[in-house]
Image (cartoon, rainbow, N blue to C red):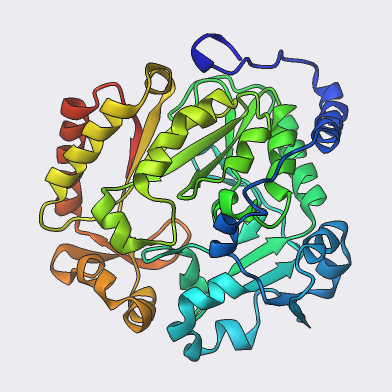
Length: 395
């Protein structure tokens, strides 16, 4: 660890050695005892108490699948042909009233057949094939359920070795990053948690630990994931500056209404220094920004809190993404079945318009004028209350 808690960067080495070094990094992690104290304790069991597993046969037969099932000796297992098509989950509108219970008690195991790295250019340079889809948390605005229907528990992909090999090949094909951009000045950034929360996934298996170890040996790339859950087990993974954690933040009152089952916002902020000292790069997602009565006052208070409690070493390397709320008609209807109070602030047709997203989905966002003025105001608040917080991008 460098001065002030900055992680030392591994030296650049020849690409012909990368494959072997990545193997060595994973072997080093496997040989070093990781405490996993949190995922074996009551805090983890409050989030996940898996009693039912839907699994593709190939996932059950894989080494990672066997490891996962060994931790769930009492779970009932139902074999399914596809992790995407489980009628009793995704096609069953009766699950809406059991939204949180399904997330707590149900797990899906699958094999990720399509390994594709997609360009991004906003939060990350690339979206890597992630190790999961779905989440045990229950944020009312989450975009992942929009494709699944009436239930959205965690799906873990057990072919983690294939996912890592794909990422390694992609990184090697790019060579060094020649020009800085808003993602990073020198490293190619790969988002490894687009459709889930890596901190929560780590309560169930070592997929994220394997990815952190792999990026530790890739000197021109960084892993990146956003999280709303503080999992102290991740402090033992020794990322050596090659993984960026983005703690998602919003005013605590909004989080109590919308970020269901997540770590409290003050706890996420308090964890920043610990993660930096453990070797992670630590950024923040100011996300989503929900416009309602008093939003400017509450965001100013949050920024004041950041400025007051974060140590200098965190501020010196911090950056933020600002993301305005995006919503969806289908998710609105699901939420009305389990958490209608959330829709009082998420669904405001007078200030929103329909817009097609990058991925082709038809969503609801604040109108262009409302969004423009609100982003400008939030930037002013950041300048006034947390001037050290560099905004990497605002969307």
